[in-house]
Image 1 (cartoon, rainbow, N blue to C red):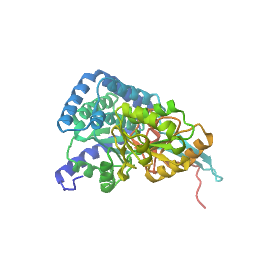
Image 2 (cartoon, rainbow, N blue to C red):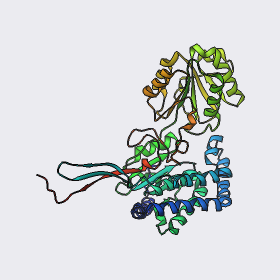
Image 3 (cartoon, helix red, strand yellow):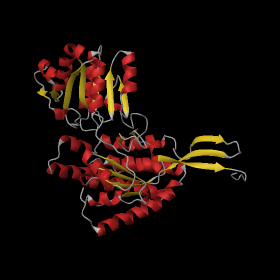
Image 4 (cartoon, rainbow, N blue to C red):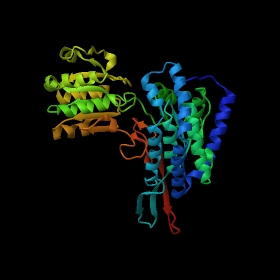
Amino acid sequence: MSTTEDPSLEAAVRDLVTKAKLASRKLGIATTATKDAVLTSIARRIREAAPRIAEANAIDLDGARKKGSDAAFLDRLTLQGTRIEALAKSVEDIVALGDPCGRTIEDRQRPNGLRVRRVAVPIGLVAMVYEARPNVTVDAAVLCIKSGNGTVLKGGREALETSKVLAAIVGDALEEQGLPREAVTLLPFTDRAAVRALVRLDGLVDLAIPRGGEALIRAVVDEARVPVVQHYKGVCHLYLDAGADLETAKRLVLNGKLQRPGVCNATECLLVDAAEADRLLVPVLTALRDGGCAIHGDEATCARFPNATPAGDEDWGHEFLAPVIAVRIVEGLEGALAHVATYGSGHTEAILTPTATHADRWRREVDAACVVVNASTRFHDGGELGLGAEMGIATSRLHWRGPMGLEALTTMKWVVDGEGQTRA
C-alpha cells in the first residue's frame, strides 16, 4: 500500500467519511420496518437493473482480462446472469432475519433494586475494504443497514464500474425510505493511498474489515489506527480418516476443491490416513486429475500416484486459490491433527470419518473458525450457515470468529434503571 502523503486525497476521504458518520447516527435509530423496507427496495432494484449491472461488470471484466488476470480473479469479479438474481435473493434472505439491534443480552435485578441490562446496539461506522468482489458492495451495505451501521466501502479498482452501479442502487433505496444515502458511501478513489487515509480515521471509523488477499489484509492491519477484524487466508484441509467411504470422499474432495477454486473456503490440502492410502488415494486423485486439478503430493503420495508433482515445503500451508491441491499421507488422526496445527490458517478444517470418537476429537482439538465433520469445507459461508450473507470470514478471535453476519456487526451497552438509588 502506498504511504505517499497526499493532503488533498486525505481531505477528500475525511470529508466523505465525516458525512457517512453523521448519516450512520440516523440509520442507527431507524426502525426495523424502515430498514427492511430499504432492503426490499434494494432487492427489487437489483433485479430491475440487471442489464445495467451486467453491462458495467462486462467493462470491469474486459479491463481485467486485458491486464492478464487469472481465472480465479475473473471468477471473483464476475457478476452476471444467475449471480445477479442470487445477489437479490440474498438481500431478501436478510430481510427475513431478525433485527440484531435492541435485543436484550442479559437482564437482572440487583439487591439494591437496580435493573441492569445489556442491550445489543450498532457498532457505528464500518469501513469495508475489499478487492475484486463486486457482490461485497451489496453484501456489506445490506448487512450494515439491517444492523443499523453506516458503512464506507472501498472496493478494488478492477470492480469499480460494477460497484458504482450497485452503490447507486443502495443509495436510491435509502433515500426512498427517508434515510440519508451517505449512510452507505462508496469511495470513488482508485489510489491505494485512499485505503490508508480511511483506516487511519480514528474517531470517525469504528471498525475496519478488510476482505481480500493476504497482502491487502496485512497492509490494512499495519496502517490502521482503528480496530480491524482480520480475514486472513483460507488454508482449508480435508482429512480422510480410517474407514472413510470412498464415494463420499470423492464427492467432498471434488466439491471442496473444484466447485469454486478461487474462494477462501475451498479445500487446499488433502490428508489421507496411511492405513487407507492404498484404498482411497488413487481413486480420489484420479477423480481430481480428471476434473482438471493439479496434484502436489508428498513422497508417499507420488509413489502411489505418479501423475502427482512432488510437493515442496512451500506447498504446505499454501492458499492456492486455483485448481491445485496439496496431498499428504499421515499417520492416522494424530498425524492429521499435528499437520493442521502446524499448517492450518484457522479458517476451515474438515474430517470424513465413520468413527464418533474421532469426530468428537476433531471438534474439540482443531483450532479453527469452523470445524466440519463429514461435509465439504465449502459450507463455511454466511449464507450456507443461515446468516443470509457475510462481511467476510474472520480468522482472528476478537471480537468475532467465522462468518460475520448481523450479530457480528453489533456491540453492547449497559442500561441501568433505578428509582432514585445512590451509591453508599
